[in-house]
Image 1 (tube, rainbow, N blue to C red):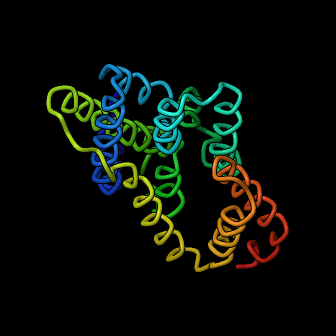
Image 2 (image 1 turned 45 degrees about the vertical axis):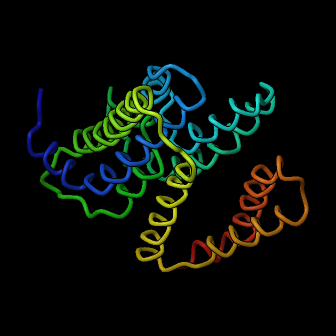
Length: 228
């Protein structure tokens, strides 16, 4: 059954993500075919993996021929953040019924940001609103990556610098999160962890070290984070 009001509301709310995912997905598609992979690899990854940051990292994995164990460990640490913020939406998804597995699968940073910053309309059937919001966001990513991969397969394109596009989106989302929560502590923890990683460990272990350090810092300053 189609729920028009919920779909229209979700579409309106998701427009900023559409603009970001369209560009980022296109960049990912271009990058994946630049490594001589078929265009449909980008499509399949976006449908069944659907993890923007990890998909971009996967490009680096492929190009450097990283070992399976290293890929596994890095993937766990990159996406472990979702297990933490996922806990905060369990209450929201409690009455989602059969839609709940997909809502969990499709919970990206951008979708989470919308779920936690946009005021909800009490007249909406909320589980369908969540479903359409999640589905629309993934569709933007899938369409963007597919068009980028097809375009890159047809036309030779200089992909230098495109891998920074995901970082740019994270910066914008971080700014939006600060505007809502007015808490600088997570940003300070992340900055310190990044500097420590740069100074202390080899470049191939920087990401894991920074993530672990950030998690430890969040636990240490838990009270400061909760009392805002």
